[in-house]
Image (tube, rainbow, N blue to C red; front, side):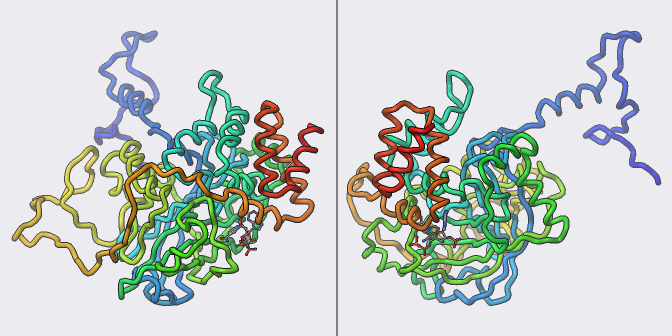
Length: 478
Ligand code: NDP
């Protein structure tokens, strides 16, 4: 078989790719050796900044199929009719570890889905937990600093996390999930996904509904025991990525049943807690899950860097019929994701193949670094105009949202119950699960000062007295 000719990146046929050009047999090398200089220079630039969070991840392509009519809630084209299929790309990740970190760390898992809808990209950028540690985006960098490395030693140190958590009770609900069995999911296929935030759907009559998205694994929940997870961290740090890739390669396509909880706009005002607080769930008893469709992953990426590393999810990619909510954390993320992508990938990141909308894109934005498409050729670039440029469609405007109140820095701790829902979860655990969560917490909290331990026991007691008792015993035995 004829082999392609080797060239430089500029297409110049390459005569030598094995031996550098030198002055004399023993060197030195010459700067005129184009292939040598280009190879070394490009190699130096192979890495782009890794994501500060969710750096380690794996992904796959698939499809979303509508199984139930929810057009009374949303006019989004993705939900247009039962049976409709939409292509998607999903990326799963750990949060705190760097790109080379082990997949089996006790850490929430990112669960991000990019739907290529007929009305552009919809990015649902969630986690495998229905809640989060924080409810105010101002706290996010502080929280993440505690998950990362100690500025003095460069090492991870659980004492920093527990010190922070002991002073931040809004974290209790997420901690109850993180230190339970589900804190160590067995790969990505056996965990649920959640949009976590409150989002909105709006229908053709411009009625708004607040919603939460749930992706229930069809493979069943499966978790690792701490000893297994620790062993895998040493023997196969890419365990979850391997599991996902192999399952798809063997045509054992993973599926998730997509569901929503719905609250009519006016009903949200009657909640006895803030329905836009990311540290809270909406009880299923009151707001049951409604079927929407099925997500299936069925095609592996061909190039990890091009597809998984360069995929860029942004929660503010929401086509008409889907919208945001006043959730403060969501509002912070609406800014932060696009900002991160512009830093990591450049201002034209939406034109990269994995990020590009499959429906028509027409904007008046131009130029910028790495503009690798035609940059709209000779078409002029301003509006209003009478040269027949693209125009807006006012029918697609989101319904207005009434907001009231004084501008201020409101203290979200005031009158907020950080313990009841965390306790509700604890009370669902079996006796074995209750033992294990106490052991898992003690194993991590054990190296902290007595003062921090006492503060944490106090918080866990407020969730459920029984957990406080078990934890005290575990810490004493530690
Ligand atoms: P329900 O009994 O109706 O729901 C309990 C939920 O807890 C189910 O979704 C179940 O998920 C999930 N669950 C069971 N075991 C665990 C675990 N070890 N870690 C995490 N989740 C688990 O009760 P409520 O809706 O009233 O919620 C009670 C508590 O359950 C909440 O405070 C919250 O902590 C947790 N929860 C609630 C969710 C919600 O949206 N309402 C979603 C997830 C958790 P599954 O069906 O997949 O087994």
